[in-house]
Every structure is written in C-alpha cells, then in structure tokens.
Image (cartoon, rainbow, N blue to C red; front, side, top):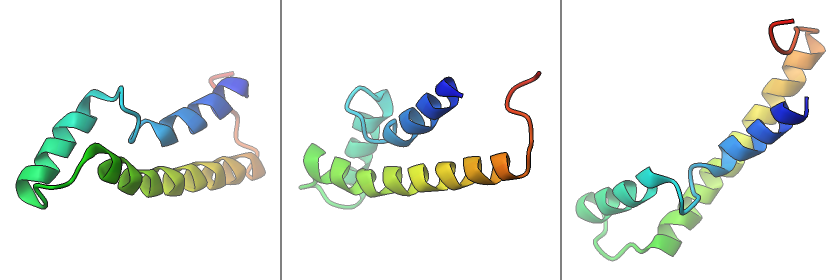
Length: 75
C-alpha cells in the first residue's frame, strides 16, 4: 500500500519535474508552435495544474478501487 501511495504521488509530479527529459523537448515545441517567449517557469506553472488534476483523478480511482473490494497486486 505504501508503494501504491508513492506511485500515485510520483506520477502526478512527473509531468512538471525539471529532471523529466521530455520537459525540455515539450518546452521547445511550445516555443516553436505557440509562443516564442514562453520560459521554463511559465511552462511548468501551466503543467502544475495538469499534475494536480491527475493527482485528484488517481486518488478518486484508488478510492473507487478500494470500495469495490478489488485486490491490490497479484496476490
């Protein structure tokens, strides 16, 4: 269960962490296609909202999973 909680929290923050390799590719793509003046801070602050929505969805999914009584893991 601890690993499950960790993975829920970690997956929600992966989209805007600076060590994610695709962050820089996405930033360059956003600069080329939409706004050449967008910087890392603006880009990450916009991704933060997506991460928080993802966190809420994962938590609701976990609550629904537990309420249905489904097993966590193969055993």
